[in-house]
Amino acid sequence: MSEKEIISALKYVSRMKPEFMLSEMRNYIKSEMYTQEIYNIASSSFFDLGLDIVPVDDDFKVFRAPGGFIELSDREEQINEAFFRTAGVSRKLERLIEQFIEKKTGKDWDDPVILDRIRKAVVSQKADYWKSKGSRNISYEKGYDILGYLAYQFPVYFVQFQHILYGMAEDGLLKKRMKVLDVGSGPGTVPLAITDLYNRLEDNKALVHSIEMYDENIEAYNFLVPEYAGIKDKVDVREPEKIDIKKLDVGKLPENIDLMVFSNVLNEIKDLSNSEKAELVKEMSEKLNQNGSILIIEPADKVNSTEMRGLAISLKVMGLGIYSPCSFIWGSGCNPQGCWSFEQQEDIDPTRLMTRLAECDEPYRYINLDIKYTYVILRKDNLTRIKYRVSPKAKFAKLSKLGKHTGKRINVIASLMSGDLGDEKNHLFKICDGTSAKPVYAVLPGHNLTPENEVITNARYGSLLSFQNILVRYNEANDSYNLLLSKGSLVEAVEG
Ligand SMILES: C[S@@+](CC[C@H](N)C(=O)[O-])C[C@H]1O[C@@H](n2cnc3c(N)ncnc32)[C@H](O)[C@@H]1O
Image (cartoon, rainbow, N blue to C red; front, side, top):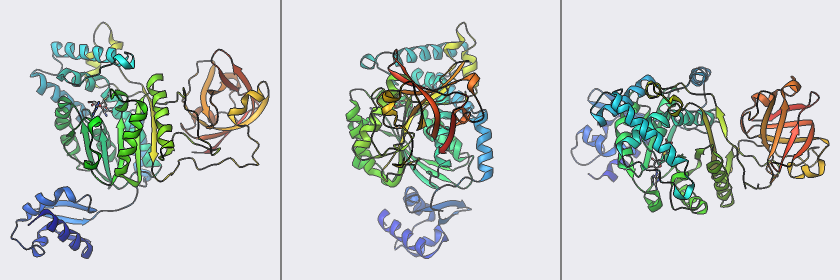
């Protein structure tokens, strides 16, 4: 009996019955087969057939999976908000990572010699990262490269990904049954983060396919991800495909992807220009469902952040739509040259491993808790997070016209494109309306904070705000504009 025949029999039976036992399939196929044999042949197809399957005694119950998008319940919101207040790596996952260190080294994870080697790996990885792009050679060939990554970068990236994913859940972008392709998976940060979040949601499931180039990363992935995902079985993970994405055969990727993720990957791909990366992502988007999302995340430093904005705009020009964080309220494209915009979140809790690594003369080298990242969500269906468009009659100045208004008080409407970049005296926020080639900042001196303008201090990144009665100043040193908020300025949330 071929796989094809079994799948078509499954399709037939599942159309007839919303729920059935897998053993019943034996009545619909010609050859004699055990239920377990049918399961083995069909197990990788249930997700695509829109079916859920659960073991029951010696058999399996098969039923139609719920369709559509996740709508968070009050309880799910409470649980997740509590998680994000003191977010970190769960004790179970921490322990799994410690066990991986023990497996790789044959010693206790906190053996002083092992800790010292991990410290060296962290230091050398950071030194590589900060080399200029041309001479950079970040490698994951040695076992300690991965241990250093798990100790230092992983905890932040793990929580960071959950912030973004949860934001997508709040926006109704995550499917109740979601097929994910994680590109450059490393030790499995993204599937581990998806597992963590889905374990805090009710009846929702994901299937994750991964691509990774280095054996050491794949080994870590295979140790950590299936075990962690298996705890609640909400996330089904496939073994990573060992692929260099520069040589990717897009035709061989899984079909009907709902979420395609590039988390801290594109900036590390050597020998590809930004336009070649854009072509690669565009080509891969063939495999994305019409209502699916592509999520690109990069570090927040100026070089990587500005490069990613350029990449996002290239993809927009190539026909993908930007869902967030950018909005195009004047209906124009934008000039991404030098656009440095990133999101910040609360610090994470350190892991036990990080704390132990920091018990040395230079603890600051091994503590990595702050979350800052650059991201973009792209779509094929041109859905946008911000729907607002400025009406021709509205009395707002475009940020591209600030030169004409310098020294005057005006009204503008723009998205909040940073956290608070200021100091004790002044709050400072990057804002953008998609028209200005020069950076624009809203400056709110602490003594001018009033209930009428304080909304800017707690608005969501990417949300749209209107500003009334603000003073335009040109900052010659930075070739940028500052919009000064006074006690009489009014800031209102418009959307998002
Ligand atoms: C900084 S790590 C990110 C890992 C994970 N996505 C995360 O967010 O923690 C970059 C990953 O990209 C992978 N990578 C780099 N170049 C690649 C290529 N040409 N093909 C496939 N993977 C690549 C590396 O092996 C590494 O796992």
